[in-house]
Structure formats: structure tokens, C-alpha cells
Amino acid sequence: MHDDHSGPDASAVLRDAGLRVTESRRAVLDALGARPHSSVDELFPLVVERMPGASRQSVYNALGDFTDAGIARRIEPAGRAGMYELRVGDNHHHLVCSRCGVVEDVDCVVGEAPCLTPSHSRGFTVASAEVTFWGVCPACAGAPVE
Amino acid sequence: MHDDHSGPDASAVLRDAGLRVTESRRAVLDALGARPHSSVDELFPLVVERMPGASRQSVYNALGDFTDAGIARRIEPAGRAGMYELRVGDNHHHLVCSRCGVVEDVDCVVGEAPCLTPSHSRGFTVASAEVTFWGVCPACAGAPVE
DNA sequence: CTCTTCTTTTGATCTGATCAAAAAAGCGGT
DNA sequence: ACCGCTTTTTTGATCAGATCAAAAGAAGAG
Image (cartoon, rainbow over all chains, first blue to last red; front, top):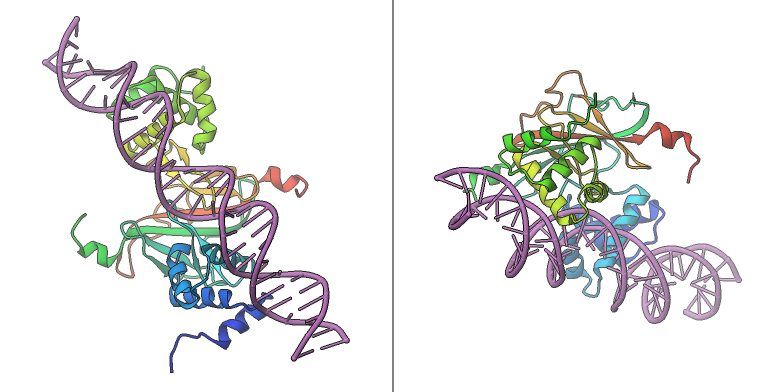
């Protein structure tokens, strides 16, 4: 049939996360599964395509709820709108194209997970480390300078 | 003596950077020197104190010009307003308190400068790596949970 | 001192995001 | 299958941070 894991799958994910299963949330979850690293503006059209009456606010709501429930992660590269992804739990990082803004996952920097020694520094109790690599993606590197 | 390099010093920095020396820029530069990791909202009152007629826009202008000229660096922790600092050139990173927002510099993560192997990844030409540590500062750790 | 160029001011505008109240829908209990 | 409580969604206002643009003002080369 199709390989997007729509349908009952999304419902299960929501239920397991303790969230009520609504068509709106299922639509957002599926859209995000299909297009990781998307912003509200990118997701909204996909949601509307499937749910003509949907509001942009409902996408904000769903993404906020997903993040709070731990089934989505929000990233916010400097100067960019917030983006979301469903890959949570593994502490991966991101590679952002400074021209077109496309984002790719980077598994980890120096081999293993504790690549960035989140320990004590300057008296801070460090909880997490966020790494963003800035560069130029292959497509932009090949394209003429705008 | 004093360690804020106000006065003629700021003028020299501006001139050397190829920027016209104006009272507004000198005020912003001195304010930023006195309070690194400040946002426009934090810097503006300091600038106004010395230059009663100053506009907030002039602070945005100056900081943008400093950044373009390479004498300041802008950082933007997720969900925070943009902040500026005069330490440029050394690729240092930041430690941000997730409660109060205070920022501290972190010299480098894994010992030496190329701590984050900015090389090729997924076809990207990586230009820089930005690391943000999130944690709780000593002051907030000691304070009651709000 | 004059003239050109760059800055500053002023005020509008923009994006991304949040807040709040009323209407609508989910779902547990019966 | 229905009821009723609770959560969600919608709608529309509001906010923060930042940017844009035109007119007025200052810097500095000659």
C-alpha cells in the first residue's frame, strides 16, 4: 500500500504519550514524520491539505504538546523559525545550510554520545549540549551565487 | 587604573574596523564592553544614560555594523533575544542558564580549537560549529524554585 | 568650509509566537 | 449508545524582536 505510517500508528503514538487522539494531531504528526525539521509554516499546508478546516494555531498547539510529551523535539537555529522533529532520545545534532536553511541530522560529533561532557562548568549544572554546524549544502554549493 | 576601555580606545577600534566614529557607536561599544552577552534591550538603557537622545534603532544599527565589521559576534540561544559580545576570533562557546538566561563563555569543549571537526558531512561544506550548553547557574540552583 | 557619503531618527511593518474565550470534540462511565 | 466532564480547536487579539524606508543630521575627505 503506502509506506507513510499514517493511520492507526499515529494514534498509538499519541495515546502512548498520554495525548488525546484527534484528527488534527494525527495530521500534524504524520506531516512531521514525512518532513522532519519543518516549521509551522511548512507543516500547516500539509495539515490543511488533509484537514481543510485546520487552523495554524492548532499546529502550534500540537507541536507544543508533542514537545512537552517528549515525542517531538524543537530546534531553533539562530535567525530561523522553530523547527520540529520526531527523533528524540538520541542526542543528535544538526547541520544547517546557511543559504537555503535546509537541516540534516548529525549523529554525534566525537564518536560516542557523551561527546560534549555535560558536567560541571563555572558552577553550572549542565543538563544538555546543543551543537549546530553551519555550512553550505551540496545543492547551494552548486548553484550560482544569488 | 580602569579596565573598561572607554574613551579614545573605542574610537580606535571603530576606525580600525572601517567604521565612522560616532558618539552613538562609541556608547554602544563601551556598553557592550562593560556587559558582554547583552541584548539590545539591555544595552539600550546604558546607551541612553550617556546619550539621552539615542534611539533603540541606533543600537540595532551599531550592533549590526559591528557584527558585519567583525568586531562583535551575535549569539542567539533558542527562545532568547539576540545577544552580542566583543570576543571574536577565538571559537568559544556558551553556557546558558535555562532559568535566568545568564550566559557564560566556555573556552572550548574537547581541549583544543578544532573540537568539533568542521569538515565535510553529508556533502556540506561546514564553516563553523556552534555549541550551546544548557544548565542551571549557581545563583538559580541556590534559589527556591519559582 | 563645502560637499558627498554614511548615520541616525522616526515610525511603519513584519514574522514567529503566545494568550484567551467561546465553540467543538474526545472518551470514560453508565 | 448516550451523557457529561475535560481537553482541544478555533478565532482573533496581542506580543516581542527585529527589519525596512525616508527624511534629517553628522562625519570626514579634499
